Image 1 (cartoon, rainbow, N blue to C red):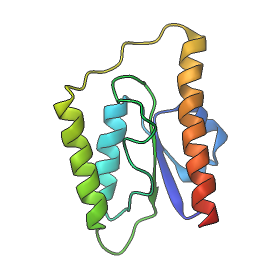
Image 2: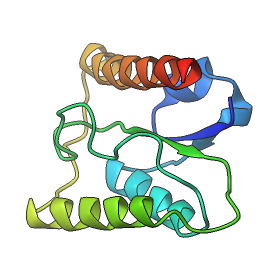
Image 3: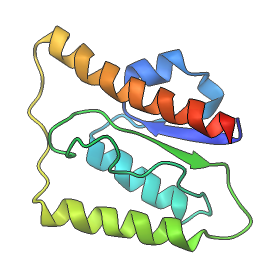
Length: 126
């Protein structure tokens, strides 16, 4: 697949071929900022940064699919990532509390993994 996954989810990092994963050691906010930086370096968003109906301060994990670098900036992606950042700021983003229960942590990782795996499968069929 001609795409990259930006994630802070260890499960995604370990289960999806490493050549496709850009791992961010940080919060959901850090993943969003890394995505913004890459969009401004001519990558196109292939999944929406706020997909999955989980608010950024409700889950500690986020994965976003982007294209490989393109010859020019994709303006729709730049608008979407800019609007996403504005939405998160309006929501009063705060980092989710650290999850101490490993079962709950694994559940959040698994939900994010399933969402991104479903999106990858859909993209491969296009």
